[in-house]
Length: 324
Image (cartoon, rainbow, N blue to C red; front, side):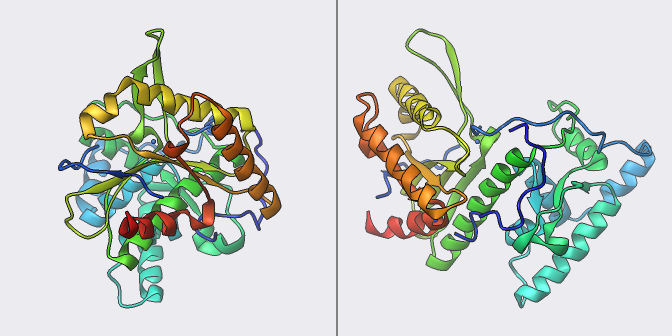
């Protein structure tokens, strides 16, 4: 995670590559990752101070969509134009029209210092303006803090290449699930990334523990359906060792043993390991190794886990809703 070299231009992304466990409930209830290190701040939030009067003018100029974009970038930490187009520009006559409008809006928000962009640009399919990686800049951070009184000033840390790639892969997964749900007439009831999906609990020794899924997702087979299927999603890009992945699985077992999730929501989500690697042969080997390790471990309930190829995960989850 401390590697700060640029990402390879052809690095695989979740959006290019995707038996559900139904959690029945009449409630629609309420993510981190193993790759969460960041480099020291580079001062990306530095620049001329924004006066209170100027900030008030900026705030009144923002539309509901502008504020929604700001909220999304804060939730996911880093998003590309492609992610933001998928999240907030879905009602246009054509993809080209949506893309043009999205680029124009993001340019304006960058000019207002609502959003900033990293020095590092994502290559490959994310080249050009779509390769810009957005984060919440100074004005955006102050506006968010004013709307959420409990929030303190957020220090900006320039992310390592590994952390950034993992974070963008989580966003890829989230938007892929939304796209698949729209295609199949399903409903995304809830989708929480990383820190928003955090669960706290005490282990068997009464020691406080924190479980941080990459994503927590609730899906309904049709719009408005009362029954939902719930999932904890772990995105693995081949960076972590097998013992680390097994250890994360055991953390899910410890949390499940508390019964907290079941008491609150009526069931425990299925844990999805969405796995990829630089080489397909490596990804296949790692998926098999994790599956074998889970089957051998006496503490892990095999039925709780599903191990999928990252590119196939979103489609598999949504299609599985209609076969439960």
